[in-house]
Length: 250
Length: 350
Image (tube, rainbow over all chains, first blue to last red):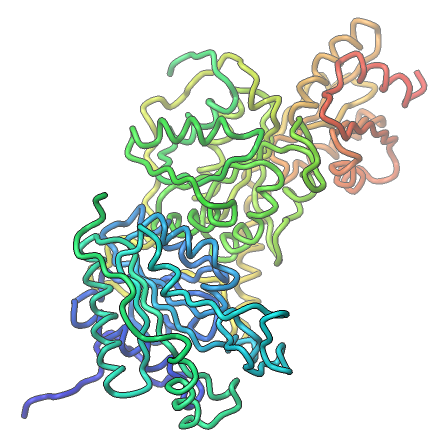
């Protein structure tokens, strides 16, 4: 009999601690599939940010380094500069990458560090219990924006993929979603492409994955899935905002 | 071995290169810029990597990444920058990652000033970052010690898998003196089996400081503490100068100790028997060695370029049965040998 589907080999423990309906587990699996398909199990090195994704090392059988909150891309810079043969990726949430770690993220991108970023954007601080994030949509109710995010007081949600696409050092900047089967297959391709581009020394590769957080959005799994489609994608459009075709030679 | 006439900052940077420094990251701040300037020029020549980071926060975290790969790493900064690094130092300690951090200290609080200072003694020795940890701290007082203690700091950092701090000051850093470059051929850094290298089918390695399950955090913290106890047994460094017959023993570190040596000579020419006790390792502190001086001397004169920080340690160690006097100079003007001699006479009613 021909196997049409199997669990990625590098996914050592698929019993995730994530809440029902959360997309982290799906994103973990997509990363695992990319690592499997490119045979990167020995060379992949995960730099893990603080947030719900911090236990990635419990699920993926790859060498893993925990970074302080927000500092993932500074840590990844240190790793990649001394071990360029390792395929280095960070796994960071929106609070981690786009708020406390904005400086580290922008400057690593601008230096064109040859690392891959998996940026999980769920418009909220998940692990700490649903506070407002830099990506929280206008009007969105969170535990620290109980009347809804209001731009005079709270500013606007940040579109990271578009912003990073303006930097010369960035080789790939894309936004994907896993909320429909089609989008999921697109996401799988882009994540794999990001790792391939790192293998080709193309520079900084950035994949933003829109993700649901039913628990902190106070929604059922299905409603949360629909929110990604109906509320998030209109503000955070999917697509490839920058893709370099050649290694970084100016 | 070769003999040079060198600046303190260059001596420190040469020692780092001779120790096999692979990765340096730093951010500009006065008065330590000579170190990154030297290394940006010299480190690439020996196959190392120099990165000018976007901040001290990024610098220390780049060190965390490079250190996890088993290489020798260093950063340097000055007081406000070291404050920004405290988060990273705490993570390095918690993750048990070796690194050397150099503080060419200046004034605070806040922007303070850019002159010579010892205002960071508490931060350096009591841990500026969160959590229950100590890191070894060495205080050079000569150009030669800028070299020797840097070599030592790399060794201690690797031996105990801990960040180590050099607490220097601008006077020692910019002073020129004779330097014996002891290891011009370089030192071979140790192999580190715990670090990320080539995986080659080995078990997954995880380097982390998060411990949530059961009592694993307690076990981890006692492990860190045990390393500190080992350092106390093996890594204490101090210097004694004319203490045996001294009526008053000066206790000072870094540049103040350097001035104090001249004060002692001046005082002895004038019939006053002063001596000097100088802790070189501020952590672990030479407690027993200092206390043992109370057998022959009851007068101790603590001098610091701050309002009294090491003073707390000296009071704790010596107790109340001896006579302790303090002179502090919380300014950029380094006291002269005459100043200290006159202060000794004034404070001890001589």
